[in-house]
Image 1 (cartoon, helix red, strand yellow):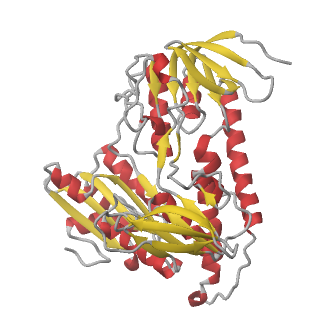
Image 2 (cartoon, one colour; image 1 turned 120 degrees about the horizontal axis):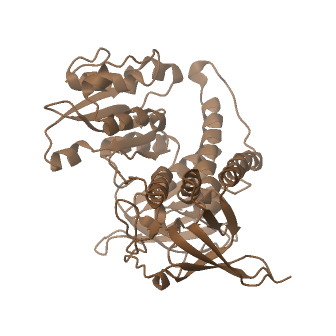
Image 3 (cartoon, one colour; image 1 turned 180 degrees about the vertical axis):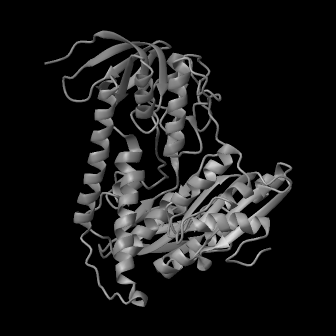
Length: 480
């Protein structure tokens, strides 16, 4: 049966049910708005289905196997057998539990869910095309709208994701067998996280990066332990190269990836790397080209980003944008915060976006986490700074885990001790950064952090000791 094109109305239309869209929908429902949420693929978006959650599930699983197989110093001798298909099945179960939970929460908050693809007709109307033969379309009129369509992996020339040996991150996370070898194009956070996963599964991994180091944008002292651990895992790096093409090997056994020097004036010769798979992880781009935004009077910049103000508004006052489609940083927690702000502003609440205490995490081995200002950024802004550090090798709890690489670094204003930012590389950095994010958000001082009693033995004591080090009275490390 073909469904005819009918017209319905809603107070708030949200396009995209990822971390920005579904959070906005739930918050708007709590604020008694009539909400319609349109999603063309899967509730939870890329993060829950193909990104944050499945990748961290596989990182955890491979870490367990790797740690069990390398724990001779603790008196543990094991040779774990890896069943990647079983691991992926477990990962998919985690994803299904979370995505079904999102759908239930939306319904419990009176959100109307529509499956389909939305395109703007004008600034108060969208057309929703339903997937499936004969499913037709419908027209929705709205008072306000939030665009939360997220981002997609960037595709590079000659490496189309439809070609079987060429993978994006979503496809890599769905493999049911461990590749013998893999070339990864890009040493950013996605490339480095997945390089660690496959290296621990036993894959021979080579990473191609056009720049001269891993994880562009992070300080050298944070990158150094990650690079060393990658070397220990046998991951090889080719810096200063760009992947240009690939082809099947003449003997039919795998593929050959060709990489050219990134610098035009380089004397380096091109690389010819053999592998079973090639994973392209050179970044993500906003999904803004499928919406007919121009019909609503909305323009994007040259990167396809919808520009917004501090209240998530676009250039059209009643249309908002949140999440990856609204630009960097492309982080799920940033997306959720922006979704909440947009919903609250639409409901008449005095809400605004503040990125000052926005944490960023890389789930490499070891993890990296940052919040607020770095030392150099603070000094560039005119602050006179004081810095405190505490190495995990001096942490009793870190020693009991066998994971002592890295440190906690805290940056504060010298005159009054206000915490400006922090960086952590090491075990559980993703969890430890929350305390320092709260310190930045509340305007806490070094004395506040240092005088807060931390349980012993815990990794969190390292945060306290870093603050004490900045004050000149750390107990378990030499003071500066």
